Length: 547
Image (cartoon, rainbow, N blue to C red; front, side, top):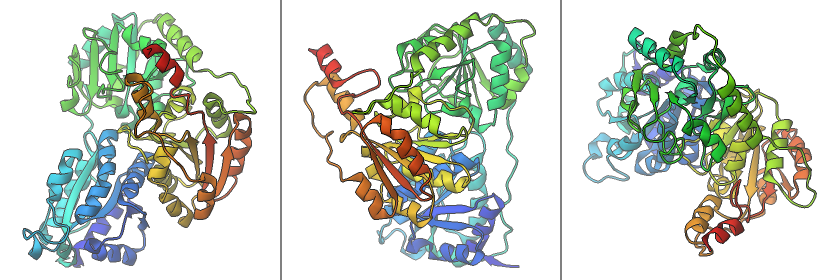
């Protein structure tokens, strides 16, 4: 039987478990949209902006463990969705980015919205290609789907001229291929074990590679057997249960110095599935120069890229943990116990209720208390996130979805993607006012889809992170970081969502309960003190230090 390139593409997506495709309708993809309509098994989710659609697709993949798919049209749509492509690359998320191109006969003549799409998106993607031969589109789709999911996952861009989609093809749907998971060599296993057995103060920095290989339980078993503390790399909070005795904290922007000391004082750092990026390493200062590092990564190009390492192991995190096994001798738990006590001391919030103002620590404490353990939290960028990163505890794997890229506007569309991936779980997005209003139009998408998710908005009427950096370098010289916001409760109601405002943290538990019970999208505005510029500092503190 013959099919069109468009129907064959839809069949390939189905074979790979795709059930939602996100995007903004485009004239470049009317044939593909019609093929989705005719098939009926894949839901097309029209967003209000391609950037929001790309965030939805990325978060859907992160929450489901599958592959995200986003459609964008020509140069304008591609430019809009590029932020999501970059986020997928930074998050190591499998994503197929289908970008429409103008008709082949018009290529090279500066046609309407013509640009070199692979050249444009290639630098922020894992791979990018344009295919204008209809006979080669099916194998190009198969390769793109395979590339997106194997090795270090990432976004693969496939640009298709609109005329190729109507052509007939006899190609069968592209079926998933089992990806290889490289195991450490026996020599590597012996070397890692020797280093661990010789270390008195080892630490594991656990990154996305642990999550992507499904190795969370194995990491727990490893930490227990070897008595080693585990710290989570930047925005990988749920890589290890935060209530576990071997958890020692999360490496974020402005990590408390006592938590950073777990890395700086270690005599062996095991970087497991993490690229040891700038934020995780506190500006490449933890580990410090000269510390002993073992790095394990499925992507050989990451090994030794950020730091010189004593031992580089090209291997899957799960295969490595299982190969290392148990130490064969009783390990002294003193170092691990000490680092856990430090983590508890720094991040424990004693219950209190303030009737006249908001203490962000109490909001985060009440949020944890008010959510089921398996609730999914999606995380925007902004200074508000410091409180979430420090004080919220993730007890289970696959309960956190955040942008390692630090993209603002991520949380709300990400919550939509996560909720569609698992409709039975509670999903809460956490944003500042700056990030929330960057993609607030996607609240209409959530309302239209009747998704009962909750958006918490910490409102300090500023770009808080930028203001913090301004005050650190140029105290009192404020430019560009102050904002004027609409009434967020009225705005939520105008979209058809539930809206509530909290001006005192004592009122937050009731507002959260009402939002969770609203059976529709809900927005809870949390009025915060603009002077509390970070978890550990006020604007006054910063100005006093600089005086």
